[in-house]
Length: 324
Image (cartoon, rainbow, N blue to C red):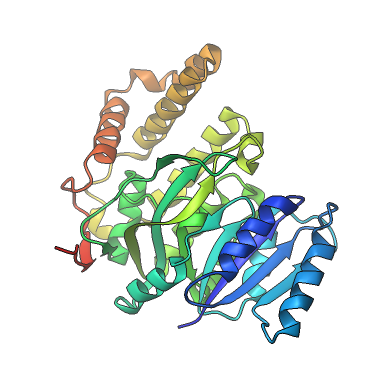
């Protein structure tokens, strides 16, 4: 098994340096592909020099590609995966970074479940200074567990399978290529989740209950440029895609699609309310707030996030036992 780390960047040289440092410092050495989306801040000169210095000491792990024009985040990810030679891809945004043992731990877990096509770990969410704010939750039993393919989309629909953002995820390159890559029409707005949906058609999912990555929460994050209404609309589109992929064994157990749409509207209305946007919250919540089923779904999702081992129709099978 061979891993490639694919880093996408645009005009964030200082942050990019940290991402590259942690990629090259992995305890399991791997290829590091950096895709520069036509930056104008000195990124090109820095990468060319760094590649040269590494090559001079016989280290050819770092590969640099520069887009001739600014193509956007999704197309840059696709370009990086095309260039990579690894069997598995670890995507990494330039403002995020990895624990030293990230690739080693993922490799070990994946080796135990060769049917897997996607893997996710816990992440620490940090501020611009690297201070931890919070940590994504443990989502199942053991040190690592897997979910069979036929259960994944059912779990995603009901928020029981939180793959998370790219810094948490790795995927099998061959499965990614079968999907056609990231959808540029969703650029930086659920384009990652859309990809997880498509990749999960081709095999099982592994979840590692260990913090192996760091996600930076700051005002410069790409998804901050979208309005809450735009994020709501795209979230509904994503739920509709997931709904169409739910395995036949779960068809009798899933809510109606309109109830799912109403649940999503309630969720984003509460997000708006927390941000003090009363008008937006009211607009988003009507007529969804009149749906008892939507409120029930919201309550169940909230409860599932608080109880890691909540019973459901979805299998979570231990891959690596907890150490006693």
